[in-house]
Length: 440
Image (tube, rainbow, N blue to C red):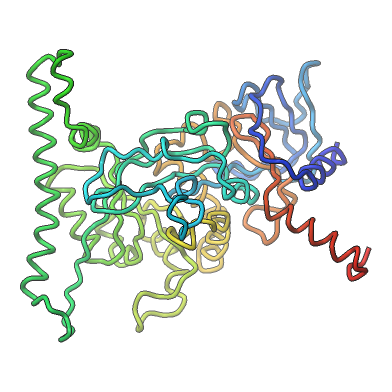
């Protein structure tokens, strides 16, 4: 059966046709003898995993297969839950410098009614490349303006955006105002004016919160008849789940002053927030824990934000958050040209594991911890009975260099692991073979 898996992988590389989404699982599948990285518990060596109708049914040793079950021998191979990219623009942008392929931002500063999933392009060339490294789930996020819109958790497979959507909305996104005062003499704005602008930006957010609450109170006091529906304010309407129902608001903030200001604002308005970016979050662990605020840490592999900080400070930040008791997960950097690098998510975890986190903690930071923060942990994030069969089979343990992903499943559907980079590799391998410059 191992020969079957390797021949399947080779065939998928050679084929040059476009990606075809996986079929809905029709027969139960039993993977026998694998090394299961459950994340939620310990590593299970030599265990079987049975899944049917897109759900994990049993995890035991020596499961007896029924006649209608497809059985694959994966002895010695690693079965790993999908890596989860918590903040990306995948599916919303193809080439950052080509305006026609960019659909992650709308005009204006306030766009809470924007929905990421309806703009998601399931035929993006970046999707196959991303899932070839084990990232099968991504939270696709609109950007731009003060209030960017609502993100959607997407499965990286499907004919349409409706089929690819795992959860919508996953949260509202706000870009917090910069709290930096520029004292450079060439700056035209005075210090006083800069402070006034910062305060005005925060007051504008307060005004929006008050407007949403007043709007909700009005619609609650009357029955919304057919002729009244034309009076709906889409922007205020779209913010009701976040202001009234206390669903997650993602605050994009890196500096300590930004994070402190955002937490103060959330407490004053009784809102639930998640910090995205969080470069200075290691300085504020007590404040974050006190207010029960998670952090989506944006990129570990980067230089420090200040000259006096140690060169390894960003690498060590996940460990400091763990030691401080902060709930966190890891993310790759967003924005051009980084939108195509979501596949490097396990590299971020590898770096964090080299600077303090244990390997199980690092793996959790890109699987179950991300699922918990995105509030999808009942479906994905670990290998547990009852969860979606969304995982991949690798020849190497998670977060090791150059793994070969042998098979991948999203809700039990087998995913095509071919991609443009593999096809180009095969193409030029053949070129140099014909030139006699490649050893047989």
